[in-house]
Image (cartoon, rainbow, N blue to C red; front, side, top):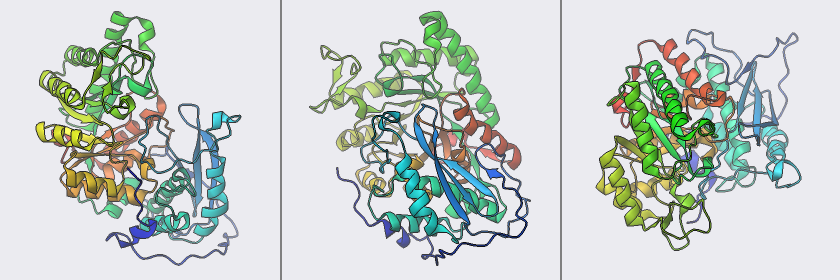
Amino acid sequence: MALATQPSTILLQNPFISSKPELSTAAIPLPPRRRSLCAQCSVAVAPSAAVRASKEYKVKSVKARQIIDSRGNPTVEVDLVTDDLYRSAVPSGASTGIYEALELRDGDKAVYGGKGVLNAVRNINDILGPKLIGIDVRNQNAVDAVMLEIDGTPNKSKLGANAILGVSLSVCRAGAGAKGIPLYKHIQEVSGTKELVMPVPAFNVINGGSHAGNNLAMQEFMILPVGASSFAEALRMGSEVYHILKGIIKKKYGQDACNVGDEGGFAPNVQDNREGLVLLIDAIEKAGYTGKIKIGMDVAASEFLTKDGNYDLNFKKQPNDGAHVRSPQSLGDLYKEFIRDFPIVSIEDPFDQDDWSSWSSLQSSVDIQIVGDDLLVTNPKKISEAIGKKACNALLLKVNQIGTITESIQAALDSKAAGWGVMVSHRSGETENNFIADLSVGLASGQIKTGAPCRSERLAKYNQLLRIEEELGNVRYAGEAFRAP
């Protein structure tokens, strides 16, 4: 299916986007005695709402650089300066949908295996940065619209979604700083969200698919502590189950099976997807949380679609005898068996991104959450199509799939308006940037997945949520209502 071809400036028609701003390309003079800049980045605690609002809201400079993400690959980092420095870094996925906005890579195989992002960096420093000098960071929608107009392509292929998103993330941080409010509060105001809600974490504790070297076809096996009374308790429950699971895996599969994958989950040499679910049940029961912790799965079925439209659950072994190849209907029946036998509340990407009829069939026959990731790629046009076809009932929100904060917020609002759930998500290639923690609270998404309670680039998000919950005090935890908080 072709990428959406609507003009990038279509965002200006959306009701929560203001008109195009006046741009000044003249440099704004600095005060005679400039104070030292403090980077407002992912490691900063959520600022108090009582912080004095900054008088400066215009962009003075934008500087991008190439850094390294959690998988050892290059990514884009952006420093945006008003009267403070606001820093953001862009995530990157391993299992990607074919309709995602373009992640611009250099392609020189002799340098970082072709994965360098210096062209994206150059596009920020030479094109976007100069055009944004003097623009008001408090108006996220207008800034994003300007960048989309400069790019002028339907999938951000001219400048790169990773270039545009890096700036968009920093603009959002700077907007909060200019208003003297926490980032999650700024996102709440931009999106028009009525009530802030702490999300249920979906911890990816067993890895398969493209994220692991075992035989598991399905990519993620997650635990959701819906029975917790707060986010802090949910994090504790998830961590306890994670460590108990480690002990179970070590005893059954050996020490090597306790090595962790890209997202912090274990990758034991499990031969069957049902076996992975049994491991989760055993760990949950041993931790004493039966009934309080539910199970979620990310199948990432596009990864094992065959040329004839079937699904090979033994796709990692090639060639194979075809004994594990299932038709779409047979795969749907397998999911129904899992739902019957295990406390599964959410399944993501159960079929290929173009297998619309199978999505609709499963959605109409089960009452759990069916999440669209590769199917939707956080794109409002794809979401509209899925709503019409009744293909799923939840959005996986990944900011780098679409490339701007404005479009990400619009995707969430469209999904909520249709009665869907919204799960804010990380990518397998992450940094210490914790933006999505604030995003999940500011949008009241009710759910977030950002890996296991392991690896600092994952815990950066979970720890930020702890800080936010502490600062807000009497704030509701989504819990059992995570699909409609």
